[in-house]
Length: 131
Image (tube, rainbow, N blue to C red; front, side, top):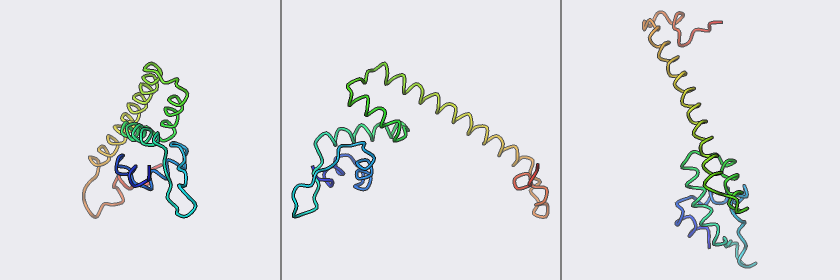
């Protein structure tokens, strides 16, 4: 399958497909012949790209996706071990949400403490260099 068709079927850009190929997430494309530079991707590339796209939609990193793809390649992917990995990802997301909420609260506290007078920038808690 040529990259243009693969791009249309997956909704991924050609550059993204080439990048995933370079990272080893999809099988390498083969040159059709020596007279042109067209590369033909194996049919399995379409399915793998759709899986990658779905996992990216869940917020997984490419390294995490590579782990999932390895499970699929080894035929060792099961609902149990996939669920376990996704549960760990949910915990990481929850931790990140808590971290972002703490940052948000710190900004709000600083905003509330701001005197909001142009002449008092020395006392502004948003930019003061306190130690």
